[in-house]
Length: 593
Image (cartoon, rainbow, N blue to C red):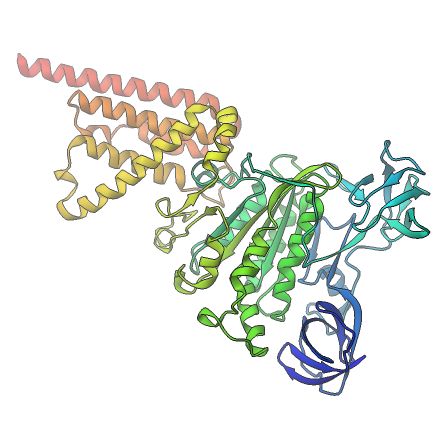
């Protein structure tokens, strides 16, 4: 038991704390506010408090719980909304109303609800079990089995294992080793600051398909990979992440709102429960966990929210699931670190951020990966982090520290956003280092033609950008017809393929098969246009063809009609170019006559 000596915002200095450890959770003041020890100096502990300190005074007691910040993991964690330290917001609201009261606590998992537990057939009473081993499952949703695993650090002979209905804190078995027994329940606790152990880490060889054309076709992120989405205010970072959270082909989605505006998180909390998973046709929340830590919540809890989210993601990864975690945004997390660092009077680094900022960013993103867990299951965690640099300047420390460790960079452009081009991803500045690793997967699942089409489209977009600079100087009429065709094809790729309406019922999600059809149709038109120009047909006549409108409407084609519509459009391209060529030949014959 210690005594508060000094208070500086969310930072508390307490003396009489000899024997405590770094990162132990403590209860601060008479209200029992939740805090965490982040520095020790002899018998003094420096504590960051995750709640509002208003009304707390020096001289009040501080009590250590002697355990680090941990999360509860078990059945019931899905379809739930937590704050940064895993307090269930629905339960808190029932206790204190709209705003979270001081010192209020609640169990992260419902202790009253009973779950039907089924033993694994290969696990027998009396057999030896080790940490991470699956001993049974709970059918948490219609689509997802929640596997029950032996907690880390526990191994020995299992006894008392049985099927039945249990609450998450009831004993379902006992593991004994060297006379020491550990009760096993449906839930377990894990510290948030330590990554979960695993056997092996593999190279990512499968893309995380998102249904967003600019990501899936041009700049994919691998399952088990990492991506950064930097962009200024209003460029569409949150909408882009929400789209990925809705439609990514991950088994589990963890969405962390870290220091974002309350109205944005409200949109998520209101919208997500109403959404339907396009794969299972079940409510999307059945595979989603939301962690909400808005900008008006205590600044120290932002750091906790990031670690809470990734620990939940690793838990499901260890079951063999593919997990995608959205962190929106890591800049707010870094700002919280900067504020705490300043109150600790640490030597500031660039722009006032602590010198250990790059290390913390690297440690966080390195928790992504495709791994073999201790029980032999293959699972993955994909991290997609938004970065909010002031004024969109990505030369600032958070953006640069992030770009050093992630392999996919989606550069959001405020000029594109102002032109209502969404997702506002700049195709010339963005990149994905996973393209070579994913090539075989794309060839197998989308065909070699898809990989070639992507490369052709990128060359056209780069050439179009060069020609647009020339056009600004001399005008489009000065260009030869072959270059005019490049400009038109590039425009079609930008407007008819890359631009995607997140609020359109059909265009909001595009399967890989439809993406291939749309892109191949545009490039087929471009190839026919080049052939026509080589036969001296004017580019102006090509740009007035009716089939261009049909290509533009392909984004509104339903998924079930993809193949039929794609075939029909190519037939119309053939017929219109044939008619154009025939008309040109007739004009030539007339001139000769």
